Length: 297
Image (cartoon, rainbow, N blue to C red):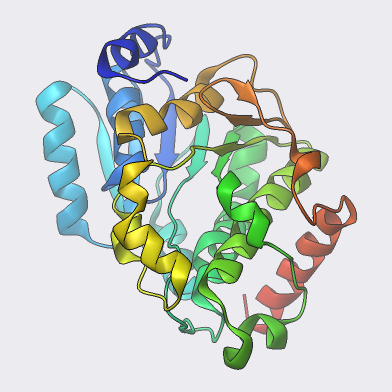
């Protein structure tokens, strides 16, 4: 794995020109999304940066334009904890072609909370709202032959055991922050495989433990959220290193549909994920569609 800025710069130099390409990144005002946007913008791409706060997005854009003064950077806002917000964002988008859609935004190891649609927050923010965003952009994705890159988390797989029942997902009495997080990250994997089955150029990546700031927001109770807040910095890498895998998956010819990546350009063997079941790919897709319909979307 590339471990320092010198190698990061060398990696970045090998990213091809992206002039004329259009990217959209969820969760782009900080962390891995922001670092991805920086690289793509410096390589000439038009980048739509998604986030909840227009002010924070504008601050991110200002920082990027110090490095790429001529970059075309467009802020788009929505709250992934509210499907209505996602729908409104898409209705206001003015995109005629999209080369890469990076599903990067997420929350992790947080306290129990239901979204405006009455869905456990990690499942909705990390999976369902991204699923809905892709559904809303489906015609554009098909027409543009968009590459969809989902950011998962390999370390969370040990906590994952997908449930296809909203009552079970939402049950407060049995809620464990890391289990809910693991479920949402395994859902990212199966969503990617479902997209690939439907002819979409979709890849999934594991960035590894990275100092993105998400660990500081791990306000759930228990041992693992405590570790995330207080100890993870000891093993986590800088964002400039952690971001390399999703950049690789976004631009490399090696990252063909249905592939999975970790440690920049190393193949991630999904068959080794505990509780990985091939049939869950179709089951998750069906459950997600039914859940959206039941909520009026």
